Length: 174
Image (cartoon, rainbow, N blue to C red; front, side, top):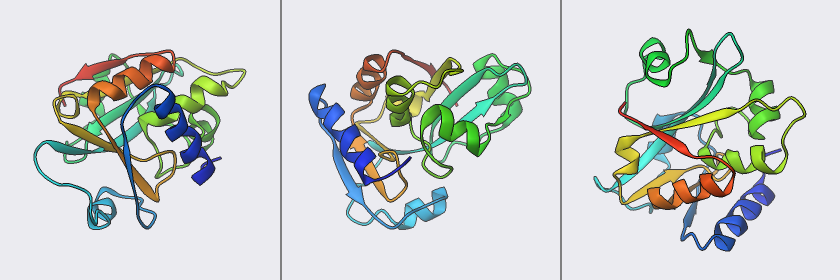
């Protein structure tokens, strides 16, 4: 499901919303370490925050997309408490593809566009949580529905994007 065509569709959607963005292409990355090495010409500094994104679920089939600053340590038990779920685990690759339309390594809040445009018949509600460190940044960076590029947008614009996709993000202190 993920492709550069999906990236084009996403960026077109951002354009229709009047959201400024800049996309940087690089080799596919699967980890934060790989992403850090692939940054190339992307601006750096404390006002620019890169993300790591987790798609999790609990045993009652409640789903959450957690958008964290890349350096934030994640303890799943503490995270479960913070987002009001019990005993969370990572959602399967099959559910990730069915509900968010992306593959492992490409998880991104931009995938909420897929959830909005192509809901599965049994689509669960997916709550989105964003680390306050990202919200406080000047620019935040996310994959544009595949892991061979990174797109920068303002955090307020990310929240406007999520609202246009029928939801809103809850801010967390990770």
